[in-house]
Length: 167
Image (cartoon, rainbow, N blue to C red):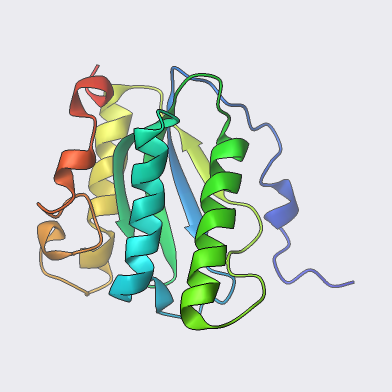
């Protein structure tokens, strides 16, 4: 069988979950031709899932940006949670809620996700700047703080655990 995403099977190779590290995660919608994620009722589902994980002390949030067909989140694991367990929680909850909202069925998210482990506060700040500037690079806004689906926006900036991520 032909795999249209030939590297997807390798996404888990070498993946570890370390509580003392921060990670940038990239997750894509199954149909990348969509702009579903920036519909306010859909982005709210995703942001509320991030907030729930934070309030349940599963993750610390270092920042996020929701793009039309994917999102980036910088997070740090808490307690004994793994990247896989966090992503299963976010994926299954949001897929079910989004499909219900859109009155549809089927796979919403692509299988797997991309992760980058941060090695320093400098790396974290570089990644945060990169994800916050994603909407600017795509021509969606002029400045990062204008993008309403991001922790660069004053509405969501308070969700960043600055004390922990600047260590």
